[in-house]
Image (tube, rainbow, N blue to C red):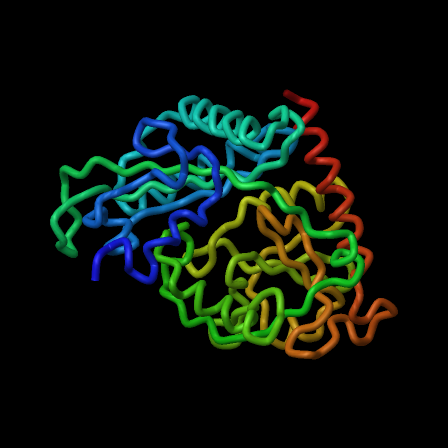
Length: 313
């Protein structure tokens, strides 16, 4: 079969008509190519970051770069750029994206995806010492959660956390997360909340928080979860709102009996959960199955932090 008749050959034409960054050059996304021997393709041997931009300004950029450094250090991949060089690349890519959408960059909300693989080498499980990292970046529109969804909350399902025990690395090896997310996708739910044994870990692509008697709880920051950038942010927001904040191990029973359950991520920001496994969240409260008072405070605080970040530039 010729390549042009291959059943998947046409998929490249369905890619967005935007500019990406690959190994030192900006180019159309549909024209970007890497070697089939890139270890990111062969092994998932790489890391990534997702940086939200509000009004064209990177949000919590310092924290994203710190986590990128931690992930690269764990994988023994040298960071190819300094923090100022990363910022320059993010700003250039954001400007290119704005141009392709005929907008001013300061009027756009974007998600910048950054991926660094170990690079190209003959296939061997051992880490080669002389690889040049492959750097890829692309921009996508930031699609905020609709007010209608925020007003009702989202449905989730629970599952055993079957992933590896280095979840603290923001690795491109995401098959475990793909399987976890599909569990909820198959039943029309938004997320899969996972437990290692009897204890809460995280969701497939979100951190998970519970509220009990006015206190916000989250699992400790260890190797079993990815420390989302919102970990530090929610801590700061709770302090600003005088809301008690505690990191400790959380049992499954505590999750199902919580007054509120929240999700957080770059794209979800902070999002209320209405149901888990068809059971109402906060069943014993006056807001059963609906967003609760702590969520509402944190959502408003989040917007204030975003506004302050945008106005500081």
